[in-house]
Image (tube, rainbow over all chains, first blue to last red; front, side):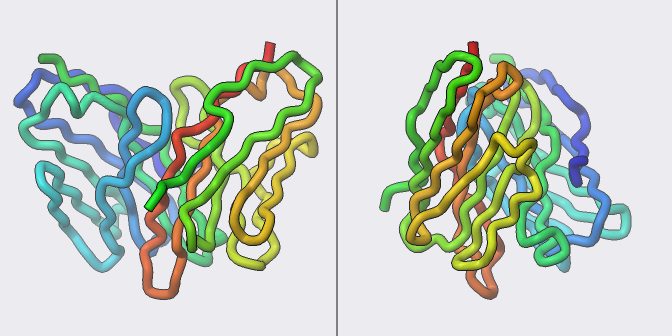
Length: 113
Length: 116
């Protein structure tokens, strides 16, 4: 079973709008990471937030983490057509999970020009 | 430096044949992971190598699947007697996994396997 569950599964927005997607997980974590995947190929690391952090920014990306609710959100502001991709959250529970990341099912984002 | 590379990029095979997929991780990365992704789905963990430790094989779906990592670098994922349900994109990732690092994973472009 997957550690992370993402919501929504798919999202369609107009260029310039903001896109928000959420990730919930089940066990304690060391950090949570977000990845982007274009065209079903390799994933690209976007941003990492540690368990003792609550919010982090990177360019147009904003990530929040609520460890009490075991959830995270990824916000993409002022979206562009090039942001069309699938976005995955991944949790690192460190030794408790055998030192490997556990990925969610992903959110497919379509940004319409 | 070069990123993670995988070969072949595409592989079409007939049911019952064996296939080998190769992954070249980033030089110096001690951790190497294999994932499988079926069409439109998330990533399914298969196997994890960390240095000289015994690999974590907990994600391998059957005994037809095996993987090796030679010399702590290149890895080969072997699928014996392929079945149509093995059709997927097989992704490899590596990370430095040093003390104090955050286990950011760097992915290869994947191998798209089609079993006819």
